[in-house]
Amino acid sequence: MIVGVAYAKPTVQVWKHVDVPEGTSAREAIERSGLLAQFPEIDLEVNKVGIFGAICPLDRTLAEGDRVEIYRPIHPEAELLEKKR
Image (cartoon, helix red, strand yellow):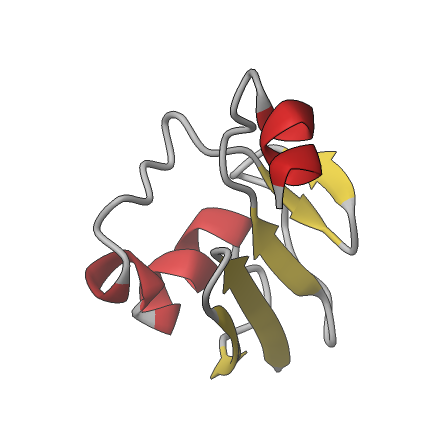
C-alpha cells in the first residue's frame, strides 16, 4: 500500500510516497522513507508525529493513503519571531 511521509522546515518541505506492507506502523513508514537520514535533526523520541494533522503514537497502524507528518518542536518565542519578519 502507498502512504505519504512528510516533514517541513522553514526552507524546505518534503513529502515522500512510500510503498509499505499492510500492518506497517507510522515509525516503520518514517524509517522506510529515508527522511531520518536526510534530516538527522529528526528525533522520533522528541518530535511528535501525526496523520493528517492529528497527533498519533508511533506504533499506530497505517491505512492506504495515510499521510504521516513529522512535526518540529515549536520554539517558545515562535509568535514573536514571526512578527519580526
